[in-house]
Amino acid sequence: MSELSTLARPYAEAVFRMAQGESDLAGWSSRVATLAMIVSDTQVARLIADPAVSADRVAGLIIDVAGAYDSARASARSGSESFRASLGERSANFVKVLAENGRLSVLPEISAQFETLKANAESTVEATITSAQELTQAQIDDLVVGLKAKFNRAVTVQVAVDAELIGGAVIAIGDQVIDGSVKGRLQRMSFALQA
Image (tube, rainbow, N blue to C red; front, side, top):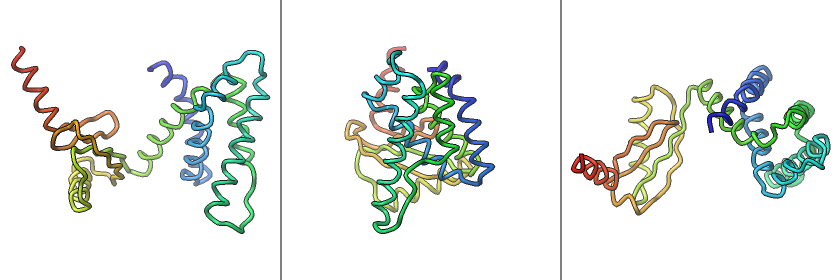
């Protein structure tokens, strides 16, 4: 996994600098996420790995699919407006560079690293709150206030429910995990008793 991270880093940083220069972090975030989703498809992944298919052909296919996806998504948001059917020249060039260097399969990691760079630039942090039972909006708001104070950043949250936690919640922020679940406490007690 660290090799994948190392391969993705220069591309993520380059796209991030370009997005900052264009003042379009949100747009590039969407484009890179779309590209990552496309290359994660099993059929596209097989095509990328096939040595009989040229890098130019794979890049062209991905650009076409991304453009069609982008247009369909935009049309769904606003029925009658006309939208361009491509990701743009810079995005297409990015895909071509990745294809030429055999790095298309690294796009999901590039996307993840781009999101981290974007969050740092925007002074935001993304948290995933997994609780044993569904949380009320007031509980979520209280957790967000506490996380904002702890990390001194704006916090965006995703909430999930996992009944196996028995009670409490687990909060994941980047590589930090705050485990306040009953299941986690029981596991820690078990480890302590075995020691």
